[in-house]
Image 1 (cartoon, rainbow, N blue to C red):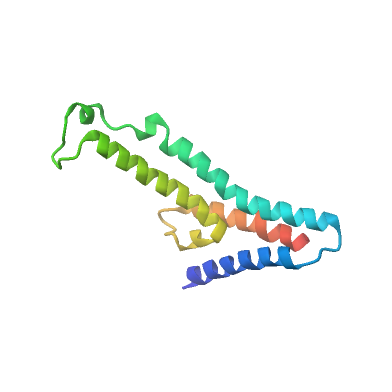
Image 2 (cartoon, rainbow, N blue to C red):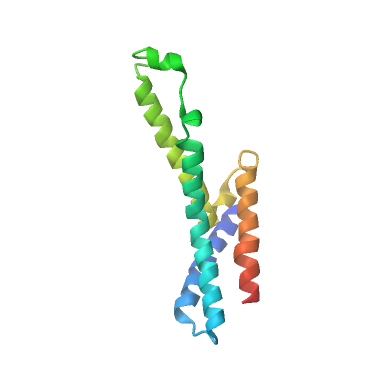
Amino acid sequence: MFRVLGTCLQVGSIVADFTYFFKHTFSSKQLYVSYIVILGIRCLVPLIAVIKNTCVKVCNKENNRLRALDYLEPHNEDGISAKQKQSEHTRQGCLLYSILPLMYFTGSYRLLNFKNFPSEIGTGLVLDFFCYTLPLLFI
């Protein structure tokens, strides 16, 4: 219940921050530029993480390779060829490693299981505090 509430508050915070940016008249140019930088960081960090995770964890030949015997057999016991198995593995890997960083933007990483995704949740909490909450308090 608390995780769902936290996610809803984070999405509301994003909407409020961008609405504030478009509706508010800033008193100085420095405040305006600093607010733009914070909102830019908020958008760019997940996109950079998507590119990095996809390149390192999915497109890397060592991480994405099946066993050599799977390529020698035309079909395995399920009737699926190694090429089909490889393409399905790549598709699911791209989906997983592109969705996880985008959860940092919306705050929905809080809905993940703490046992299975401790580093993603920790990264999200650190990003929330140091890149979103703390800079906006000073502006």
